[in-house]
Length: 220
Length: 227
Image (cartoon, helix red, strand yellow):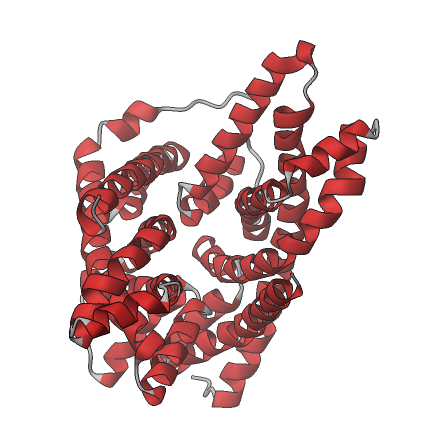
């Protein structure tokens, strides 16, 4: 038997793919910025917060890390309206991605924070730096530097996970591919092209973040 | 309309959970076997290739690198769709569970091969050289000297990855495989209680994954203290 592939039928719908790609990038940028910020805060809470706060954050981290992203997304999108919180698909997607990433980021950053030598914190204390200053200026930069590769990998995993958001009709890349295959029945071709775009995106994001990390986040 | 009690919901989810477990184990075992092949292929390409076969070794190692980049750099959901629609393209009518098992096996194999390569790389080079100086061939070096040491450090991250596999099976619901998430969605559609049902679904996954996470962490601690 012969298999005929018609990629042009899919590529001719490039405006749809472009919009999907833009949404995927947008979702990833917003949720990784917020997610890492939350992760930094939670990592502080887990490493040096009061006991009850440590417990709360620890439970949050375990709950999120031991349930699938798609269930978290469905819970937010389908489950919360029952309590009166109605979210748009896009909001639910961002929220789910932030929640998911922040839990992993907390653990990753905490590992870096705990690896900071005690002497550095004591030295900073002896210079009368405030707690906040010690964490953001002394502890965090080398910690982030240490765990940056793991953090970048996690951001990419969350970006790839965002493909699931199409299931609640967020107009991201996999949703665009689904839309195209619904129009011309070229399912295989549509998903091949979407997959290739995701692959290119994940390679580009890794390059970009590796560069940006050394340039802006921990410096030198 | 049939009334669903909480127990009905829970019981149906439990029954569906069997399929989540089955699919996870299938993917984990299948992925482990394929991953082992990938690992041996890569090690062969970097260590054992005889002078005549260096070109072949280079091709093999490039291909295997590409395989891993491909599966780690694309969404599992897309891999599932491609397995589902791709196999259908050849006139094979694949049931959802076959497509899901195939896609998850490949996905798992790429990650396990990468995890295990890291473990093998952690074995000092001198061990390989010592084995070589005892006139062991590549297979013997691997079987008697390197793998027994590598397996010890490979167990905790491998168990940890099982959690990712279990969570990954949730995506099989999208192509219609009747596992935990899919059945949860169906019960939601019948009962109009999304909050309750998805809470139960999440709880089930947690009950499956959390013990595995704990075991992985315990093994890691044991390994660290043992050295």
